[in-house]
Length: 242
Image (tube, rainbow, N blue to C red; front, side):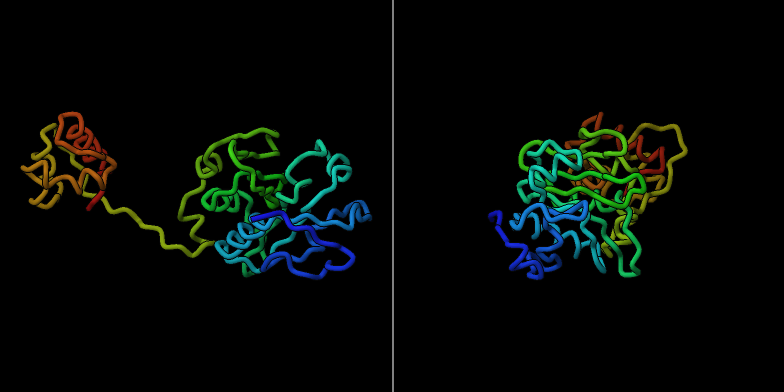
Protein backbone atom coordinates (compact mmCIF):
# COMPACT_ATOMS: atom_id res chain seq x y z
CA UNK A 1 0.00 0.00 0.00
CA UNK A 2 1.01 3.61 -0.44
CA UNK A 3 0.36 7.15 0.73
CA UNK A 4 -1.94 8.81 -1.81
CA UNK A 5 -1.96 12.50 -2.63
CA UNK A 6 -5.26 14.36 -3.06
CA UNK A 7 -6.14 17.96 -3.95
CA UNK A 8 -8.50 19.57 -1.46
CA UNK A 9 -9.82 22.05 -4.05
CA UNK A 10 -10.53 19.38 -6.64
CA UNK A 11 -11.32 16.32 -4.52
CA UNK A 12 -12.54 17.47 -1.09
CA UNK A 13 -15.81 15.53 -1.39
CA UNK A 14 -14.18 12.42 -2.80
CA UNK A 15 -13.88 9.35 -0.63
CA UNK A 16 -10.40 8.26 0.44
CA UNK A 17 -11.89 5.22 2.19
CA UNK A 18 -15.25 3.56 2.66
CA UNK A 19 -16.18 5.90 5.51
CA UNK A 20 -13.87 8.90 5.06
CA UNK A 21 -13.87 11.90 2.74
CA UNK A 22 -10.76 13.80 1.66
CA UNK A 23 -11.91 17.00 3.40
CA UNK A 24 -12.03 15.15 6.73
CA UNK A 25 -8.34 14.27 6.43
CA UNK A 26 -7.22 17.72 5.20
CA UNK A 27 -4.78 19.90 7.13
CA UNK A 28 -7.27 22.41 8.51
CA UNK A 29 -7.56 24.27 11.79
CA UNK A 30 -7.71 27.69 13.36
CA UNK A 31 -10.03 28.72 10.53
CA UNK A 32 -7.57 28.00 7.72
CA UNK A 33 -6.51 25.43 5.16
CA UNK A 34 -2.78 24.80 5.53
CA UNK A 35 -2.32 23.02 2.21
CA UNK A 36 -4.28 22.04 -0.86
CA UNK A 37 -2.37 18.75 -0.76
CA UNK A 38 -3.89 16.04 1.42
CA UNK A 39 -1.75 12.98 2.13
CA UNK A 40 -3.62 9.81 3.08
CA UNK A 41 -2.09 6.43 3.88
CA UNK A 42 -4.15 3.68 2.24
CA UNK A 43 -3.20 1.17 4.95
CA UNK A 44 -4.39 3.56 7.65
CA UNK A 45 -7.73 4.00 5.92
CA UNK A 46 -8.19 0.26 5.50
CA UNK A 47 -7.46 -0.31 9.19
CA UNK A 48 -9.77 2.51 10.30
CA UNK A 49 -12.50 0.97 8.14
CA UNK A 50 -11.93 -2.38 9.86
CA UNK A 51 -12.09 -0.71 13.27
CA UNK A 52 -15.28 1.14 12.28
CA UNK A 53 -16.93 -2.11 11.25
CA UNK A 54 -15.63 -4.15 14.19
CA UNK A 55 -17.13 -1.61 16.58
CA UNK A 56 -20.43 -1.53 14.64
CA UNK A 57 -20.20 2.24 14.38
CA UNK A 58 -22.82 4.66 13.15
CA UNK A 59 -20.18 7.29 12.40
CA UNK A 60 -16.80 8.60 13.42
CA UNK A 61 -15.57 12.19 13.68
CA UNK A 62 -12.00 13.13 12.82
CA UNK A 63 -10.45 15.94 14.84
CA UNK A 64 -7.10 15.70 13.01
CA UNK A 65 -5.88 13.77 10.00
CA UNK A 66 -3.09 14.92 7.73
CA UNK A 67 -1.09 17.92 8.98
CA UNK A 68 1.54 20.00 7.27
CA UNK A 69 4.71 20.49 9.26
CA UNK A 70 3.59 24.04 10.12
CA UNK A 71 0.17 22.85 11.26
CA UNK A 72 1.73 20.05 13.33
CA UNK A 73 3.98 22.47 15.20
CA UNK A 74 1.11 24.87 15.88
CA UNK A 75 -0.86 22.11 17.64
CA UNK A 76 2.13 20.99 19.69
CA UNK A 77 3.85 18.45 17.43
CA UNK A 78 7.44 18.42 16.27
CA UNK A 79 6.60 18.90 12.61
CA UNK A 80 7.75 15.39 11.70
CA UNK A 81 5.18 13.06 13.23
CA UNK A 82 2.91 10.49 11.62
CA UNK A 83 0.21 13.08 10.95
CA UNK A 84 2.64 14.89 8.62
CA UNK A 85 3.01 11.67 6.61
CA UNK A 86 -0.72 11.08 6.28
CA UNK A 87 -0.31 7.99 8.46
CA UNK A 88 -2.28 9.09 11.53
CA UNK A 89 -5.77 10.10 12.53
CA UNK A 90 -7.35 11.38 15.75
CA UNK A 91 -11.01 10.49 16.01
CA UNK A 92 -14.06 9.72 18.12
CA UNK A 93 -16.18 6.68 17.22
CA UNK A 94 -19.94 6.51 17.79
CA UNK A 95 -22.20 3.50 18.31
CA UNK A 96 -25.53 2.85 16.58
CA UNK A 97 -27.33 4.94 19.22
CA UNK A 98 -25.05 7.87 18.37
CA UNK A 99 -23.21 7.66 21.69
CA UNK A 100 -19.41 8.09 21.80
CA UNK A 101 -17.68 4.76 22.29
CA UNK A 102 -15.26 5.03 25.25
CA UNK A 103 -11.65 5.46 24.20
CA UNK A 104 -10.72 2.55 26.46
CA UNK A 105 -12.82 0.21 24.30
CA UNK A 106 -11.53 1.69 21.04
CA UNK A 107 -7.92 1.30 22.20
CA UNK A 108 -8.45 -2.38 23.03
CA UNK A 109 -10.07 -3.19 19.68
CA UNK A 110 -7.42 -1.17 17.80
CA UNK A 111 -4.80 -3.21 19.64
CA UNK A 112 -6.50 -6.43 18.49
CA UNK A 113 -6.46 -5.18 14.89
CA UNK A 114 -2.73 -4.43 14.98
CA UNK A 115 -2.41 -0.65 14.90
CA UNK A 116 1.19 0.34 15.62
CA UNK A 117 0.30 3.60 17.34
CA UNK A 118 -2.69 3.94 19.65
CA UNK A 119 -3.43 6.42 22.42
CA UNK A 120 -6.24 7.98 24.37
CA UNK A 121 -5.84 11.71 23.77
CA UNK A 122 -8.73 13.32 25.67
CA UNK A 123 -9.51 13.77 29.35
CA UNK A 124 -13.07 12.58 28.83
CA UNK A 125 -11.74 9.41 27.12
CA UNK A 126 -13.49 9.89 23.81
CA UNK A 127 -10.85 10.71 21.21
CA UNK A 128 -8.17 8.25 20.17
CA UNK A 129 -4.96 8.64 18.17
CA UNK A 130 -4.30 5.89 15.61
CA UNK A 131 -1.33 5.43 13.28
CA UNK A 132 0.36 2.82 11.15
CA UNK A 133 3.92 3.02 12.50
CA UNK A 134 6.06 -0.10 12.19
CA UNK A 135 8.54 -1.57 14.64
CA UNK A 136 8.32 -0.09 18.13
CA UNK A 137 4.71 0.36 19.20
CA UNK A 138 3.20 3.41 20.85
CA UNK A 139 0.43 2.48 23.28
CA UNK A 140 -0.24 5.70 25.15
CA UNK A 141 -2.60 7.59 27.41
CA UNK A 142 -1.86 11.24 26.79
CA UNK A 143 -3.79 12.32 29.87
CA UNK A 144 -0.95 10.69 31.82
CA UNK A 145 2.13 10.81 29.58
CA UNK A 146 3.33 11.37 26.04
CA UNK A 147 5.16 8.05 26.16
CA UNK A 148 4.06 4.45 25.89
CA UNK A 149 2.25 3.50 29.08
CA UNK A 150 1.45 -0.16 28.44
CA UNK A 151 1.82 -3.10 26.09
CA UNK A 152 -1.74 -4.27 26.77
CA UNK A 153 -4.69 -1.88 26.92
CA UNK A 154 -6.97 -4.58 28.34
CA UNK A 155 -4.81 -4.73 31.45
CA UNK A 156 -4.08 -0.99 31.58
CA UNK A 157 -7.73 0.05 31.41
CA UNK A 158 -9.01 -3.08 33.23
CA UNK A 159 -11.23 -3.93 30.27
CA UNK A 160 -12.65 -7.42 29.79
CA UNK A 161 -13.47 -9.20 26.56
CA UNK A 162 -17.12 -9.16 27.61
CA UNK A 163 -17.07 -5.36 27.84
CA UNK A 164 -15.63 -5.17 24.34
CA UNK A 165 -18.16 -7.71 23.07
CA UNK A 166 -20.95 -5.27 23.99
CA UNK A 167 -19.75 -3.16 21.06
CA UNK A 168 -18.35 -5.77 18.68
CA UNK A 169 -21.14 -8.27 19.11
CA UNK A 170 -18.62 -11.09 19.33
CA UNK A 171 -19.52 -14.14 21.37
CA UNK A 172 -17.23 -14.45 24.37
CA UNK A 173 -16.94 -17.82 26.02
CA UNK A 174 -18.00 -17.95 29.65
CA UNK A 175 -15.72 -20.55 31.27
CA UNK A 176 -17.29 -23.32 33.31
CA UNK A 177 -15.52 -24.77 36.34
CA UNK A 178 -15.52 -28.04 38.25
CA UNK A 179 -16.64 -28.03 41.87
CA UNK A 180 -14.18 -26.61 44.37
CA UNK A 181 -12.13 -29.22 46.24
CA UNK A 182 -12.31 -28.67 49.99
CA UNK A 183 -10.26 -31.65 51.12
CA UNK A 184 -6.61 -31.92 52.22
CA UNK A 185 -5.21 -34.38 49.69
CA UNK A 186 -2.61 -33.32 47.13
CA UNK A 187 -3.04 -36.51 45.09
CA UNK A 188 -4.43 -35.48 41.74
CA UNK A 189 -6.55 -38.58 41.11
CA UNK A 190 -8.14 -38.25 44.54
CA UNK A 191 -8.91 -34.59 43.98
CA UNK A 192 -10.30 -35.07 40.47
CA UNK A 193 -12.54 -37.95 41.52
CA UNK A 194 -14.20 -35.80 44.20
CA UNK A 195 -15.01 -32.70 42.14
CA UNK A 196 -16.88 -34.23 39.24
CA UNK A 197 -14.11 -34.70 36.68
CA UNK A 198 -14.98 -37.53 34.24
CA UNK A 199 -13.26 -40.83 34.90
CA UNK A 200 -11.55 -40.62 31.48
CA UNK A 201 -9.15 -38.05 32.94
CA UNK A 202 -8.35 -40.00 36.07
CA UNK A 203 -5.56 -42.58 36.43
CA UNK A 204 -3.87 -41.99 33.06
CA UNK A 205 -1.83 -38.84 32.47
CA UNK A 206 -1.87 -39.25 28.69
CA UNK A 207 -5.66 -39.10 28.60
CA UNK A 208 -5.54 -36.08 30.91
CA UNK A 209 -3.84 -33.87 28.31
CA UNK A 210 -7.07 -32.10 27.18
CA UNK A 211 -7.79 -31.16 30.80
CA UNK A 212 -4.26 -29.81 31.22
CA UNK A 213 -4.44 -27.77 28.00
CA UNK A 214 -7.81 -26.35 29.00
CA UNK A 215 -6.17 -25.10 32.16
CA UNK A 216 -3.14 -23.49 30.57
CA UNK A 217 -0.63 -26.31 30.89
CA UNK A 218 1.15 -26.94 27.60
CA UNK A 219 3.31 -30.01 26.94
CA UNK A 220 1.68 -31.92 29.76
CA UNK A 221 3.62 -35.04 30.82
CA UNK A 222 2.01 -35.72 34.17
CA UNK A 223 4.92 -34.28 36.16
CA UNK A 224 4.57 -33.56 39.87
CA UNK A 225 4.71 -29.80 39.34
CA UNK A 226 2.07 -29.93 36.59
CA UNK A 227 -0.22 -32.12 38.68
CA UNK A 228 0.17 -29.85 41.71
CA UNK A 229 -0.88 -26.92 39.55
CA UNK A 230 -4.08 -28.76 38.64
CA UNK A 231 -4.64 -29.57 42.31
CA UNK A 232 -4.10 -25.92 43.22
CA UNK A 233 -6.67 -24.80 40.64
CA UNK A 234 -9.15 -27.36 41.98
CA UNK A 235 -8.69 -26.07 45.55
CA UNK A 236 -9.41 -22.55 44.29
CA UNK A 237 -12.51 -23.68 42.42
CA UNK A 238 -10.78 -22.49 39.26
CA UNK A 239 -10.25 -25.78 37.39
CA UNK A 240 -11.88 -25.27 34.00
CA UNK A 241 -14.16 -27.89 32.54
CA UNK A 242 -13.13 -29.45 29.25
